Amino acid sequence: MGAEVLLYGYGLVCISMLVFNLLYMAHLHTDDRRRVHRTDWFRRQATSQLETIRSGGQASPRHWQMLRRRLARVSHLLAFDRLLDELDGRDPAVRLYIQQFEPVCLDLARVYLRRENTQAAYFCHFLYRHQLQRFMPAEQIQQLLLSYLQKDSLYCRVNALKALCTFGNPSVVTDALLRLQNRDEGQIREKLVTETLRSYTGDSDALIAQLLQSFDRFSLHVQRAILDYIRFTSGNYCNQMLALLQDDSRNKELHFPAIRYLGRYPYEPARALLLRLARDDDPVRWEYAAVSAAALAGYTGQDVQEALVQALQSPNWYVRYNASASLERQGLSYESLLGRLRADDRYAREMLTYRLEQRRLEQQAQTANAQPARREAATV
Image (cartoon, rainbow, N blue to C red; front, side, top):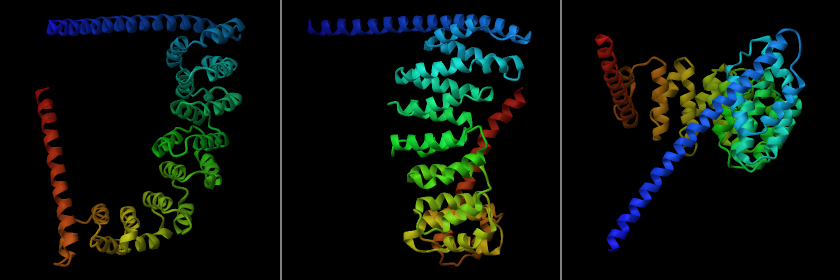
């Protein structure tokens, strides 16, 4: 009897889950149809206003009042989001329409600031996606978005920073980053900060100048993110990076991004320092040698090759690996390098043998992947 009860109970649970899934699928289907209908409705409303603008008039005040009322609901904002995807931003009428939309957007920013975190985060994402700053200045919206950085949701705060980056105001972005740092000390990932800054749409040199001016106000992990952003954005800061690397009072975690920068953008005055760091055989400073060996890949000359060959003799695996990779980028074959090494240099020979085997396996994998493509092309 007990087994039958368990069986019936299990069957009831399965039926309940099946019914729930069916109802949920029906809800999603219905919700998607509603969104399509809402988008169609917004399209008809916007089309009539665009025709008025093209004929030399302005959109109706009643139209903006309607948008204020309807877009205060997330479901309608989603539909309007789809409509903006369809509009051509190069059309002068569309540009004028969005310029006149600015007061509505400002009111919506106040409304969603009082909403729960998910809706507030979506509104910031809406601003980020459509980059409305291309059509309207929206200075007041930027000040309101700074208030979104006080929300409890990290997702909302990051979206607010992304939205601010699309407005292209360097002082506001710097202020936002400082607020985000103070709110999320040690929680926000450096890569996320770097990628968010890379979405900045204004003058990147103006932003970098503002960030460097406030550099010491940032925490160490945000400073590293800023240096990575500069490395991915511009090669005009070699002198500043060399000065940072030469500053012994700085944390070594700031020296490493500076070395990577000088490797990405070879800078002749930095050559001597990079060579010295790559030759450094102090086990405590192996990170400097490893990063410098990788950075020297962009430099040419006999002194560079000699320093990299010397780095191959390091007892540290990472130093040897980076040195061998840089020598490969110098155009030297591993076979010729093996002939230049001492017979008793076990570390260097093991690393070169490892790199040769790794390259052989990579070539085999590329060949294996290319064969199905060739067969498919022959069949076609």
